Length: 334
Image 1 (spheres, one colour):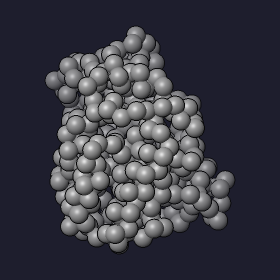
Image 2 (cartoon, rainbow, N blue to C red; image 1 turned 180 degrees about the horizontal axis):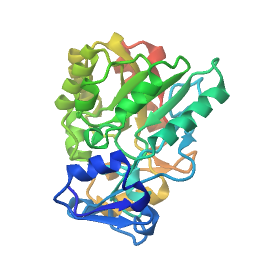
Image 3 (cartoon, rainbow, N blue to C red; image 1 turned 30 degrees about the vertical axis):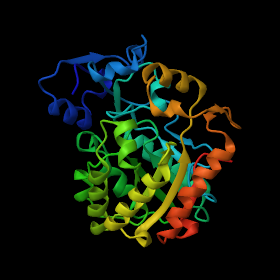
């Protein structure tokens, strides 16, 4: 998987660092002072992740838990994301990470106790009258490499007894090995990003097929883990309505609408820099087949009437299958 593994000298004795290094004994291990000395120092093309991928292990400095943008999650509660890793093994052609870091190399942060302590302080500050939401998966997939990083039991132990906080694990992965060994908790939600099977083939490169993700959802649901969905990003194509009808019909054969905690709906969107990078990396992507414009928040999107029509179309399909309207929300929209 990796050409080299770089680890911070001060992190070498940490059991998590040792665990990862032992997983990859045959790969060169290189001691460094700080991740920032090498990672992203010289710009590395995003598509080099296909042939030349390195791993960095160390401690995250600075702010570890940050407030999310508006319309990131269910309204009414404060939402935060925490930074436990950089970059992803998958290669979705619309991914904003291709224009965010100067390198596609992976970074594992191992100071999870410090992350949890920041969460504890936020929960204390917000008080018991608010539900503080914490989201994993902002800069990486929260499950794809969880069998290597090994941090999930620590977060389950912290959140399991909290009444005024929730944890969301966002993923496109079907890697549920670690979750199958953990006792479910009502306030720890596994949320799967789904697209129709045709769009997964076109855009979600290297990710598990739709049916594989649906089977993983079904397994977790039967074990008692709360499940949520992100139908995001929605990308237009001539038969997008029938594609989503087919996908949702398949979905509800694996898990009933009543069992789903919530569903977010979001249309594909880019910052200007990410969009320019995406055009360079994937010039033949079907994303470019429809007109995109600079939108209300400076992001590049479909025109507003088209976005709202697409969102309403899929919302109506969800309602027809019995999803309660209060379980649906629009992600990153006005």
